[in-house]
Amino acid sequence: MLENYYFDTDKQRFKPLDRICSYCGNATVNNEDESFYFKIFKEKSRLDLIVYRNVKYSEINLGIPRCTSCKDLHKKIERQSILTLIAFHLFCIGYILVSISYINRMPLGLIVFSCIIYLIYFLIISYSSFSSSNSDLLKLIQIVLSLKYKILSPYEALDKNEFIKKLLENGWKVESPNP
Image 1 (cartoon, helix red, strand yellow):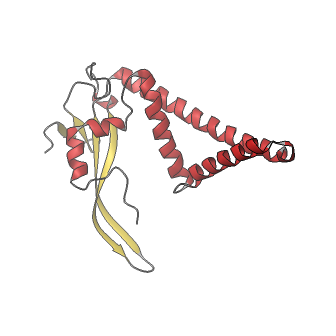
Image 2 (cartoon, helix red, strand yellow):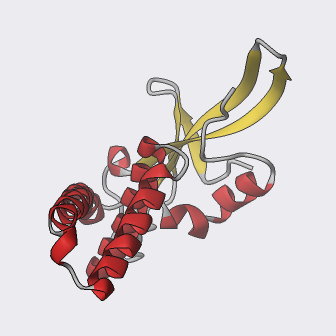
Image 3 (cartoon, one colour):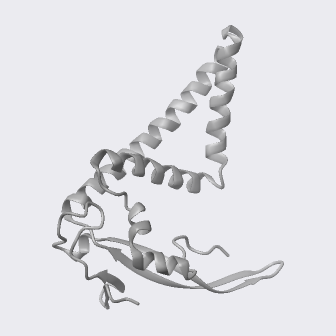
């Protein structure tokens, strides 16, 4: 099942044997450490009692082949997505503060538009938890920005890799199991 990977005992991870970049599809991978490494999890057992919860799971660290230029672009996209997310939050908070202070002078259409902006913003923030919402937004922003550079985002390559698809179909998950 792991024919395209070998286990690195020093770093405790499965390194890819493929030499073609999974993100751009053109370049060859010169250094295995530039590959995109991520963890997948499979739940072994779960114990849910009234006052105690316990989850046991297996964890594998896998690599997806990535060339140097895609790694550099992914770093650039990550920085841009963080700045975009911060700008989005600052814009929404600023818009909310300004519209609240001028609410008595605003036309009805602008008040309705402001309410829609508030609703969207607070739904995004309250979705699951703040950190989870931000990570989902960051992934979405990274996917959109990677389209600009015509490469796959780190998370899109998970869907394209046949071996990872098989693992996910067999019950492995990208998210860590929560107790």
